[in-house]
Image 1 (cartoon, rainbow over the protein chains, first blue to last red):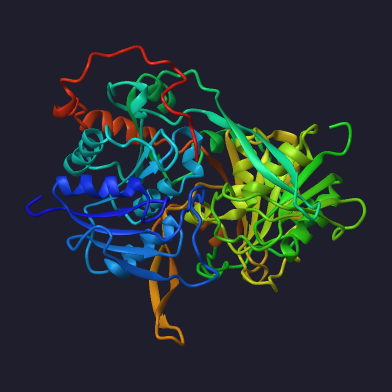
Image 2: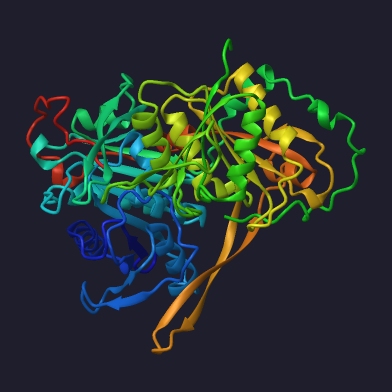
Length: 284
Length: 284
């Protein structure tokens, strides 16, 4: 790369979260030209939500100093990447999109709920190399002091060797108090889930409301998972794809299902030519 | 199945949307015992968002008559399935979870943004057979009159032959005005995206705001995709997995990346035993 790479930074904990300040500081070291578009308010657990019912606001910020073009966007992490790609950087192409550093793990099934990873996956859909970084420590006072070399190493590898097409990387980093980090390990998403419950409380008007509680349960004994890597002190790197098709499932269904025409439709009119573009517009 | 199957119904267009009323009516025909837990307000585009910053409300509804236990939940589609599974149906196990019928297509990449499919995928994570149904026609006045036999056929196949573990089915149905439906086709998720732009407007106080605009672009010429099936007048059925790991990507990275220790960490302390449960709790 002849000049400094252009790096787009987003997150889900909002523009003012400590984690994104660490990521900006690290990307400066690459060195890189940096544009930040991050949510104006915390968006944890927003998954791949987008804003379609109302418009977005975009406010320029000087939070990271005069050399970093930064914006707070009132939308979700996916919205931030969309407005960055199609409005703010309309005539430029980022060399890398990084999201985070999330305050809390996005390993295993958490990737589905993660706003951090939805920003990265949205960038991947746009054909941009993208990485979501998460620290396995929750809270505003999470200790990011050890993450620097590992974040930079993953970014340098991505800039040098690329990221597989159709994927975004889900990078999780053990918390500092768990001991020295042992290295970086490629991994698959562990089969895990949240064992959940709801706690019923009553408001002062005696109406019930419910808090979601959950305990994380790793059901996967594999040594090649992100959970196993993290448990052994490694940074885990999972390439995540946005083609959700289960090809194994397709093959199983082709064998097991019997897809004859429903009886009530078997006598329907014979096939008519259907204009290719007229089966109903894709919407969301 | 000796008795009527227990079917949990949710959606993303809210409890009062016409699409879910059609689904309730159809599930009655199976015949099935029905519990409905649907969002109190529209949640289109919510992806796999969950509510973690504030509690949920749950209001019983008589909308579908005395034989259907129905609730409006103030959360997202994923929240609805969680509170149904872990609170309302804590001691019972649904035989099938159906979501929809969505007003608008959730084919190809739209599955990622879809609240309809997030309800189904949340159920699949819980190990429940789950199907998301979408009609390729947008708007409150969408014509659902032709969907009955196709929705019932997919549900009967699912009850008889099962749904592959680790997947939820993404079922899209061509709009009625496109002509008679030709059958049901198993398909893969088409490679497609939204070609997006943002329209800047100004409020009465001269401050700018931005509307997301988008044109759906199918970049996939494959005949085995959901888009191809829909274009040819077929109902498309895609088994969608929640393991996002790209195994192709993992293999490519194992070849191409060089994951030595970062220089600044090479001299770190030698490995210490790390307690398996102490690398930082999974959070979201």
